[in-house]
Every structure is written in structure tokens, then in C-alpha cells.
Image (cartoon, rainbow, N blue to C red; front, side, top):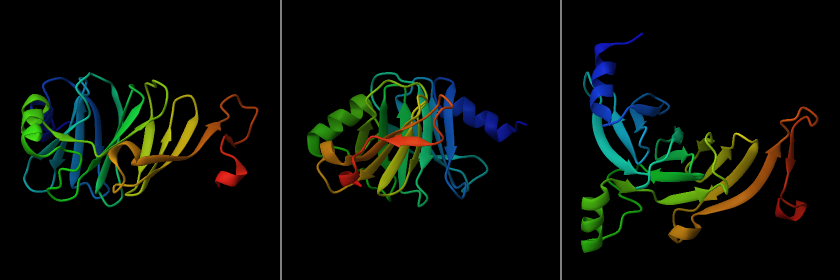
Length: 190
């Protein structure tokens, strides 16, 4: 069913229609994305009778269809996957604006683009309209609509371009002939 609070949130959450929603484990945080797919908004759900906007997270400047949003168990990391073939990771810890630039460049960037930038990004290698992602504070597992399973570690202290490292990439057998999955990593990599 619907309720007046939900209708108000949809009216005020984004300029375009909502495309994706996610709640954290205890329901105290709500993430929303619109059909534009450039911003994810983070809301507090338990402080008032209606959600309160906490911050905006910038996925990018080009439109994309956000297919999945997920919180880590600790709610300190949020992942966002889109049909652009990328998974963006955002730090939700305190007032930390991880991933943002500093100084004059940051103020110019904020005025043009608005929102906190992702602290890490993983490219799954193909454009996929439906990527599911589970995230922890130190890793993620992404499953593509074609059955690709990517296991990735996250190192927030590494340089931005190397914060996500592929551990293994497997393929779920979707043709019914195989029972589980085939791993593309060698035995020495395990």
C-alpha cells in the first residue's frame, strides 16, 4: 500500500521519477536514485515523520540507469551499479567527503556537479543493464545479468585508480549443462 509520507518523499526526492531504492540493515538509512542516474540521495528515516536528506552522492555527469544500490552491513559503504558497466563506492562515514578534491578545485567542481564523489570505482568490463552487488567495508561481489561473478577487494588507502582489485572472475553456467560455476582465475591466484 501507499502512505502520505511515501508520496511526499517521491514528490521531493528527485526531479525525475525514482528508479532504485535501498534501505540499510536497520532501516535507518534510505538511498534513492532517479531515472537520470547521476545522483544518489541518502536519507535518514528515523529522525522525523518524513525522511531527512543527509547528502547527495554523485555517480557521474552522464545519465545512466542505476540498477542496484546496496549498503555494507556497517552502513559505512554504499555501492551503486548502473548500465554503464561501473560500480561506484561511496564512503558514508561521518562527514567524510572521501573522493572529493580539495581547495579551489573542489569548490568549482561542487558548484558544477554537486554531491560527494565516489572514493572508488570498479569497471565490470561490459555494459550491463542489470548488475547486482553485495558490498562490505573491504570488498564486493558483483553478479552480471550474463552470469559473470566478480569478487573484488577494496583498499580505501590505495591510490584512487587502484582501490578496487579483482580477486576472481567466474561464470555462472546459465545453460543448464553445468551445475555451478567455472572460475577463470588460476589455482596459483587462489
